[in-house]
Length: 100
Image (cartoon, rainbow, N blue to C red; front, side, top):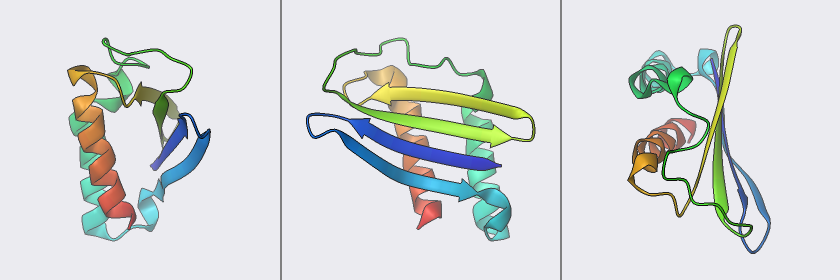
């Protein structure tokens, strides 16, 4: 499984790779943690954006992509997104911890 997280946009035009994980290259513990986080979130069933997504030209946007065998799914949210994006924010923090 591959998990990629980018942060893009904002006033400064940021394009930052936050994490790029190939779970098969991780320790067994980290692999299990990352793959369980994907399953627990129900990532492949999520809408491309949260229901309360805010739209604006200068908003910082976090984009998550998960590839697993023949499945690829992308989800994005802005920093101004409401409570619907909170599970995605927690997921990003978990993946960042594994990526370090």
